[in-house]
View 1 (tube, rainbow, N blue to C red):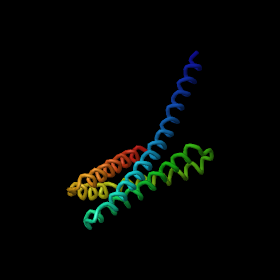
View 2: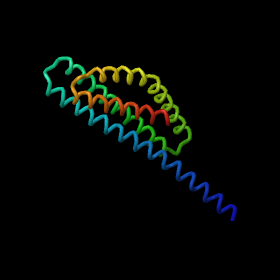
View 3: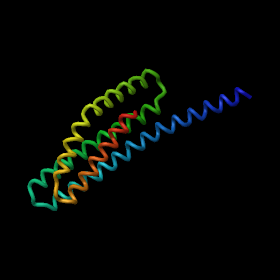
View 4: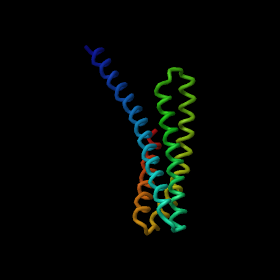
Length: 149
């Protein structure tokens, strides 16, 4: 009886852990989709304004969103690959690369979030400010999720 309960408990723990890994992949793919949508929104607003300051900011928001969409997708792919690998040396290699990228993100993101947040807070145009706020919030979500890897 004790062996059955132990085996069941172990199976539940393994199932719960595998769900977390798939969940994190889904989180990063959702983040990628959000950044892609925000990049499109900023680009659309870019073509609707003639104000040079607003165009510069929208160009920056578009590029930042596109870059972070790629970063989020890369993390999603690495996490997915890691969860589906069987070879221990290969798995260790991917884990190291994921940790390296995590370190890079956690070092580079706080100043980027701070400067982008300050720029967005200085905006008067509500539509541009709204898309900027969503980008900054998504960057914070991405940073938090990356920290939880």
